[in-house]
Length: 433
Image (tube, rainbow, N blue to C red; front, side, top):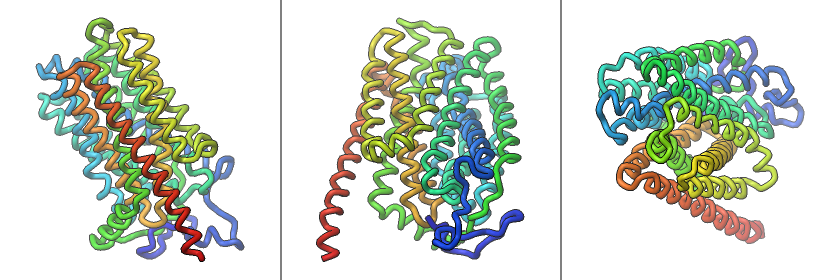
C-alpha cells in the first residue's frame, strides 16, 4: 500500500524515509515492522496506551449518567448528550485532523490530540451546568479526533501487510481496555466521592497514558507528506466515497457502533432500576465484560484467516444479535451473558471492518480511515441518543429494537457485498477474453 502520492518525501527522525513502493521491490527487503522485529513491541504498547486514553476519556461520563441526571435534574436523553457530544465532536473533526496528519505526520498529530484532550479533561470535573459539561465534552471529542485515523494510517505505513489486522486489533483492544477501565473506575469512585472526582481520576490516568505513548512510539520511517490543498483533499475524499467496498465498510462500522453506543449508554439506567436495583459501583463493574472485546478484537486477524472477511462479519453480527435478544430477560446472569455476546460481536466486527479499510485504500490512507472513523462515531452518537430516547419511550425493549435493526443493516450490506463480489468474479473472465 503506497502512502499518499502528493507532496515530497519527508525525512523524519534520524532514519531516511523509504517509500512504500521501494519497500515492495523484489531487490529490497521489507523494512516495515513485524511481530518479533525491532520496534514492534514499543509501537504496539504505545498505540495500545493511546487506545486506552482515547476510549477512557471519550466515554468517561457514560457509566455516570444516572448520577449526572440526578445532580442536574435532567432525563436520560438529555444526560446522554454528554456522551453524544464527545463522539459527535470526534466524528466532525476526524477528517480535518486526518488531513493535518497527512501534512505534518501521524505521530505529531496524535501527540497534539492527546495533549489537548487530557488538558480539557482536567476542566470537565468543574463543569457548573449540564450545558457547560456538554460543551467541554464536545471540545474533548474534537481534540481526540486526531488519534483514530492517524493511528490506523501509521500502522498501514509502518507495519507489514500480513501483520496489519493483528496490529489494528491490538489498537482496538486498547480501546476496549480504556472503555472498560474508565467505566469500572468511575463507577466505584463515583459511589464514594461523586461523578466529578471520578472523571478527574480518568483524566489523570489519561495523562499518564499520553506521556508513555509519546516516549514509546517509534518515529515513522515510511511517511510521505501530503498536501493541505482543499482540492487535493476533496479529490481524495471523493475517490474513497466512490469505492463501493469502502462505502459498505463505512456503513458497517456505523451500524455496529449504533448498537454498542445505545446499549452501553442505557444499561446503567436499566441496572439501577427494578428488578435489579444495583448500586453504582456494581453497575460500573459490569463493564468488565469489555475484556471479552479485548480478546475478540485481538484475534480478528485469525478469524478473517479462517472465515474470510464476510464470514467474520456474519459471525460478528450473529453474535451481537444473540446478545441483544438474551439481554431482554429479567435475569441478571442472562443480561450479563447478553452483554458479553454484544461486546464480543461488536469489537470483532469493528476490527475486521477497520482493518479492511486500511487494506483497501492504496492512497490517502488517513482520509480513508478518517471517513470510517467519522461514520463510526456518527453511529455512536446516533446510538447514544436514539437508544436513550427508545429507552424512555419503550424501556429496554425499545433500545434492543434499535440494536436489532442496526444488526439487520450489517447483514444486509454484507449480503449485497457478497453478491457484488460474485458478479465481479463472473465478469473477469469475459473481460480477459
